[in-house]
Length: 322
Image (cartoon, rainbow, N blue to C red; front, side, top):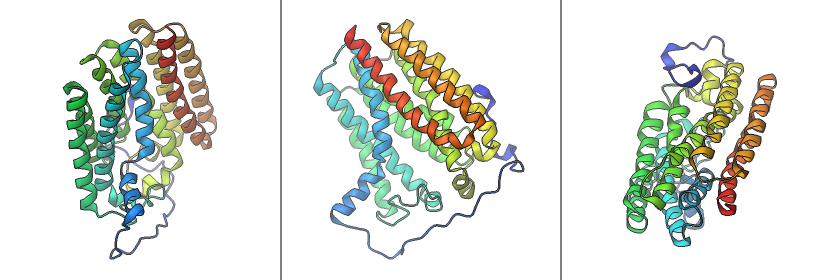
């Protein structure tokens, strides 16, 4: 069992108490149509990397580097780490597109991704992702250090083999365990500066790890019917929206507690713990409101994004002021 007792295998649950999914209407493009070329083709390959997700991951990397250094770690080191991290994360996302192409085509939220609309041949997407991962490892090893390269590539492999291939379609624990991949950039950033990992790095990892379930479950509540129609056992599909909101509240409390653990183990001043407490209380309040009004799931999703960005920005500011 994991925290708050999220049920394990999909085979062990029944769908009797869950609303029946509404039919999903998807337009399938002509399988014989030629993929776009030129700028449109380039844009399709960029879209495979899921740039918006990468942006969210990278905003945690630089503050982790600043905290590890106790100040600015050097412009070239930051740039080199961000380039390598982008390549590795982009490779993981491109490979994820390849393995999820069958469910992406039947979900409204993902039906316009490059593979469902035949903008990139599946084999090209797979090799593109592998190439990015290999180049990312080489870049980080050459221009940063080997520990950072190993951590970034380990996160790629975990995301592909553990989350995408093993967990996503088999258990509602998918996003909880798979969240370790999304929390890895803080470890990469820390290792880029110090060549190793300290307790503070693991607290940063724990913050992102605990943040991922409420962030993603609030989105999954909005697209519950999509996931149900695609046969993906996201938590709202398996246990229903009401119970999901309680899990979200539980993780928001845990997230707030973990965020405050950074103060005793890292060289931060008083700005960070004050900000962490305020942001955490607002997260808990928003999660509690979600229990009464599940239709507010996207409001929590948007706040969770702001929460992570502001919290890590305060780590940077507090370290700079200190």
